[in-house]
Amino acid sequence: MKTRFRSKSILIGAAALAAVGAVVAQASGLTRTLVSRSEISVAGREAVVVRVDVAANASAGRHTHPGDEIGYVMEGQLQLAVEGQPPRLVKAGESFTVPAGVPHDAHNDGAVTSKLVGVYVVEKGKPLVAPAP
Image 1 (cartoon, rainbow, N blue to C red):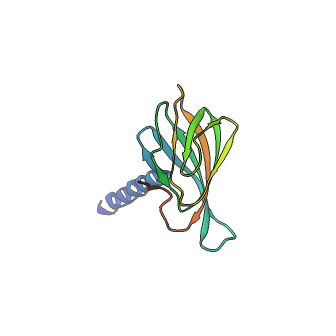
Image 2: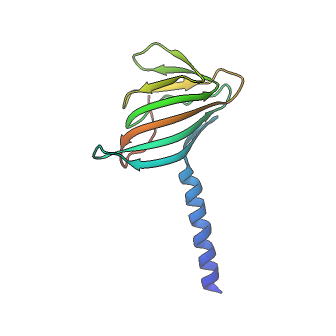
Image 3: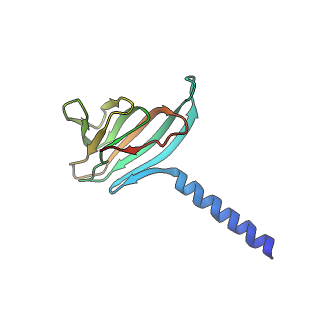
């Protein structure tokens, strides 16, 4: 009886951890869902692929990454503000790159959820996203 209860508890705990691992980070109106994480040929770095959904009138919030971000907008559009660059509108079918450690924000001022694919080449073991002042 105790063994069966322990097994169920372990399975429930593992499922909860998997669900938590699937969502990389969230701000209000923004969801990052982990697609894959894999080693690359550069020592100490890894490639992380994430599905990003930004709700209408939502913002990612000013943040940084411990490596380069390459984004591709699949649906919708975003106002991208990268420190040291003029803000720009990125529409469906367009891409952008944000250098490692550079503070940036993305705001969806459209009426529908914007959907992106983010590819990050980052330092292994560091959080994918860090808030920036």
